[in-house]
Structure formats: structure tokens, C-alpha cells
Image 1 (cartoon, rainbow, N blue to C red):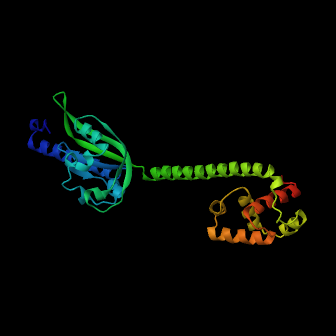
Image 2: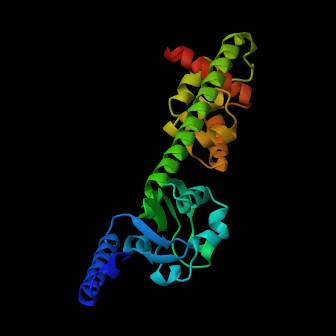
Image 3: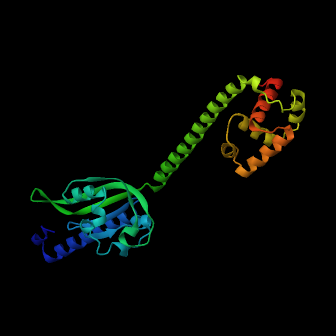
Length: 267
């Protein structure tokens, strides 16, 4: 508008109207933009927010009325502050991933993770630049962030299961070695091999699974964890197994497992 005073009144009015129409078209284009956009004047006052920004946080346009980004204490305490401050100083800034909740403004809405840019809007004045305002452009990365968090949770879970499996295998190997070197320690109260084979033939699958793990040196709690059973259920299976095989102690249970597997060729 600095050159309009050279025009007659009609021409000046036409030029001013043309500028207003250009501004309206620009705002319409911003409103349908795929990124959330906030526009601020040079003093930090918010002058506009597009539809995507409103959709992003589920806030209406009244939420940015009288909002000043340079006076927002919450913004000043976040990593985004450096990008905002630089933009108002005339230097573009990058908004690294940032978490914002409308509750920080005392408003209802949804919390989102975003990243984007803070861009100064300038105009030439006598071969220099004058700051007209700042645009903050935000991209919603919430779903990507949640996906990464879920992937990390699953990775930690798988790692925990794997480590526990390795621990059980080491314990199993160690326990088998101790059993193999303790063949002379067979309790005299145990049934003979032929009787054990007869009794063992009727062991159900679930009791056999409990049998294998208990013989490997697992505690009742560990067996419950591996087989996804209640601890009380493991005790029940253990009791039935002892009764079925006519055994009286955990030592007899371990020795019986070794002898049955020696007979069956599963050594």
C-alpha cells in the first residue's frame, strides 16, 4: 500500500480491493491445507488458525482469540520455544517432535504429537526486511509416535520372554547334569522302573508338561508363568502327578523323570 498515494482515488480503491481479495484467497487456501497452521502478527498475537489446526486438537477458533505466543509460559518451557523465538527474530525455526495438550490452556480437546516449522513472514522495505508476522505449521505424528511406542513395548516384552526362556534352559541343562551324576541317590521308597513305566503311561498331557518343568528345576511359580496357569492349578497338577506315580517327594519326582526318559530313549 506504500505506493497507492501515487494513484487517483478510483485506482487506489481498486488496488486496495484487489489486495483484500488476494488476502481472502490466501486464507481460503490455508484453511484447506493438510497441515495445521497458526498465523501471528509481529507482536505475537494469533490472527488466524486454519481448519486442520482446529481438527488436530479438536478446538474451535475461539480458542486462539486473544492468544499471544510470546506471552505463553507453557510454550516458553517447551523445546518449541527456541523455534518460535527465532521466527519472531526473522529466522526460520524447526519444531522437533512436541507433545501438546489443550489442558495446558485450560481447555478441553485432544492431546497430540506434532512436528513442523516456525516461519517468519517478511516484506521488503527500502531494500530491507520488515517482519509482518509468523506462521507455525504443524504435522500430526501422533499415530507414528504411538506405533513406535507400541513397537518398543513389544520388543521389550519379547526380550523379556526370550531372556526367561534362556534362563529356564540353562537351569534345565544344569539340573539334568546333576540328575545324571546322582544315579546312586535313588530313594528306596520309589516304585521300580517297570512300575514307573506302567504308572507313567497314564499321565495326561498337561500333567506331563508340569512334570517336565518341575523336573527341570522350575519352581511352581515359574511353571505357572510358562504354562499360563494359576499357581493353585500347578499345585493341583503336581499333587495328581505324585499320586499317579506313587511318589513322595520332589527328589523322587526328578529321579522318576530321569529314569522314565532313559527308558524311553529321550536322554
